Image (cartoon, rainbow, N blue to C red; front, side, top):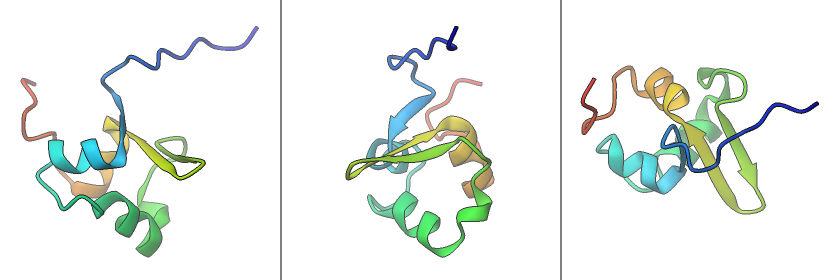
Length: 72
C-alpha cells in the first residue's frame, strides 16, 4: 500500500510561498534549483507541470536557516 501524503501539510508549499516565508525573492527556489540542484535533499523539491513545490526541509537545506515566521 502506498504511503499517504497530506497535501494540506504546511511543510509542503509552492516555491513562491516558500520564498516569501524565508524572506527571499519570488524566483529564489527556481534560481537555486537551476544553479545547484544538489543542495536540495532528495525528495524535497519537485516540478509538477509548471508549478515548483518544495518542503520545509528543502528550504532549510538551501537557505541554511529556519523559516522567518517559524515558532520553533
